[in-house]
Length: 105
Length: 119
Image 1 (cartoon, rainbow over the protein chains, first blue to last red):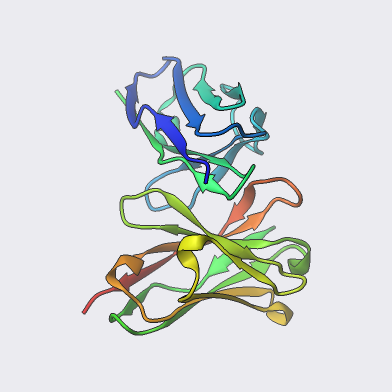
Image 2: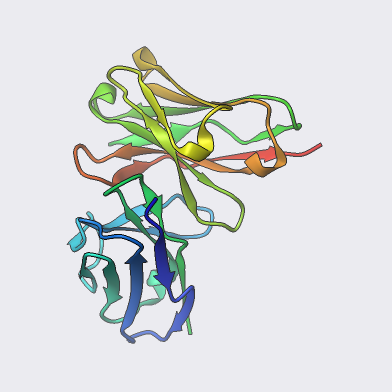
């Protein structure tokens, strides 16, 4: 099983700040996927195929990476971006990262 | 519009069984695989497995073999998850999620069903 390790576990950012969340895989994966989840809600697809934004996702978000290292970046943090973000791979048995909680400072 | 609507919350005792449903609408049910994801309170997401909505064949992740059964009512565009011999650690929210065609992620999710197991 491929283990996905997200860092940081929690991060607080001020509006306008740049934020980067990383996801490291225990073995190489072909693509990385990201979800956003707010309290009491189901996860929403956010980034697919490593770098493509899901429908409705603001273009201040971007995704990048390859092999075992991937990241989600918010160019300028907005209050509505406060949420938990999960990475996911399916190169072998599907696994999720443990999540990164993004808070507003 | 595409929707996955799940059944309501459940309160069960250890040893009992529960069956939760996920009704799909807005697309051809048998064209897309349905997956199940567990989220324990305050914890992350854990993939449980999936069911081929065309053939009805289920595939279970290792941690969900034995007490967990995926099934279909294809005529009703509904996927079901049944958990038998409930344990306290089954307390969680269970999501159904549609696989995005041949891509390796989930593009639509149900609202989740909270299952509480308590004596």
